[in-house]
Length: 207
Picture 1 (cartoon, one colour):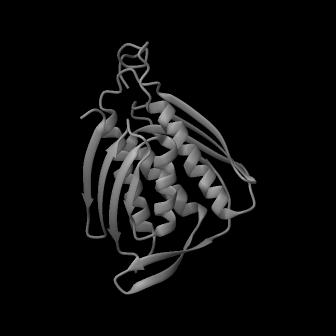
Picture 2 (spheres, helix red, strand yellow; picture 1 turned 30 degrees about the vertical axis):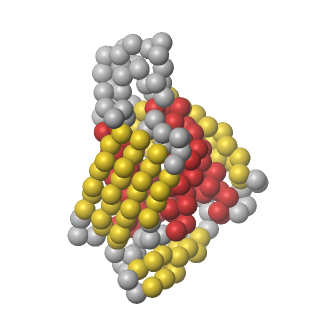
Picture 3 (cartoon, helix red, strand yellow; picture 1 turned 90 degrees about the vertical axis):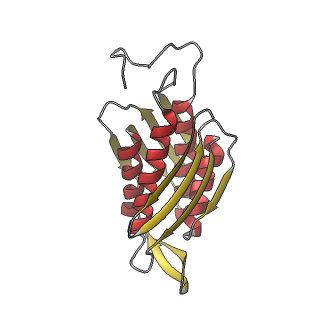
């Protein structure tokens, strides 16, 4: 099966199913009630060369927070499981990625040492987005703090160190697209297998 995992996270607030293959070709199949975030996750999978199937439901009539946070938790856990013992991985990855006028620098390091860390330097105005609920389509707003929640949740469950710096940009959509693409590229580098390496890439012998 390789580095592939299926995961179900179900709470009273959200229901998320994930099928992740780290060694994929970039196929993203998402059934996500927030189309904009689903688009960002599709870009993440495409440019990270991850095969990602994800379906999700959540209490969007309350707000975006529960579903966005739980998506980060579920996706981070899926990566942790798929990476397994982290044998022969590169461990480190970095991307400096433009999206038209926007430029994002993302540093990602897989470090399962009990010291997950996230640094986020990005500002943008609230972005009007739409979500699908049982009552139809509703208007909601995505802001930088909510995006921080997603990445912090991912980092906590995946056990990685992640630094995201948004260098510049005018269009909010372009800024977010640059961030998710760069995150995918950087994480893909960190997850890659290096045949020259033996065992776990740490002088401690464990990650």
